[in-house]
Image 1 (cartoon, rainbow, N blue to C red):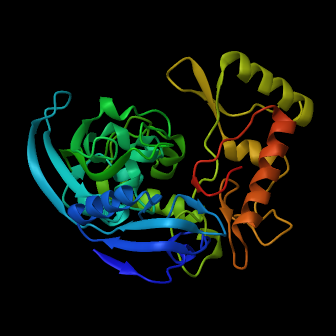
Image 2 (image 1 turned 120 degrees about the horizontal axis):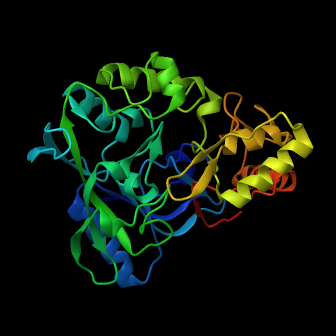
Length: 360
């Protein structure tokens, strides 16, 4: 555990935004992470646990408390018995919260472990994945999380939480919006197989020339997802300003069947009776809409922005800092987009990144 003086949080977020940290502590092990948080708690100091900074919007004023930068790197594999559905061998992958996510996915693909291959190219670290229930291209991390080792800041104890205790829902969990638990380690249950999980996402199926439900070689699944994400500016590239973002800024809204009927009416009024908004059943009697489609059809196309912050030139769901923007510039754009979509279609978008010291 080491303390860094004069740390500015814009150096630790993928948006390149955020002011100074009051105290900045680097934690290289789970023990150091727990110790740093516990010491700050005993002192009554606010704590921000920081991983890869890929899903954070931090105030221009920064964070006056203690920022604990999670940099623990432990990874281990153990056998978990046969999978009850397929008979394939289950392998338990335990990773510390500070492990970089995409290199870990790459390793699982290389070693023939199936389960998180469609989550390739997502920036950030392992510790953030259960918090957001990270997902992409029809695959959510909650499908493979066996347990999450946490430090409970209320009881002061360290304990393992089961998948069910994590309360996973769409881009949400018991960890999101609460500072009670510090994620220390995550255990994933993967299958020993050179084939991917069944394809669920139409865009991936088209890119692979495969049917929905088919399984393809892990390497092919990963390469396809990386290509799709790169085309949308969703793979970090220091040479590409479109990747200076927090990924998808808004979640895909979920509405009732009645709500979807209302959206269809609003779309017909605005765009014509022959235009059908994309909507997919969420499995719980509701309909999941496409936030990117709503944003675009509300008049906010790729590259939109009258100030230093911009909508990505590759994907309308990403708000970017091409250079010179402030957090307030970004939030002004986000508010404009949110208000425009609500005025056009009656749907209020919700931010996906975690807000630190700011709100929409």
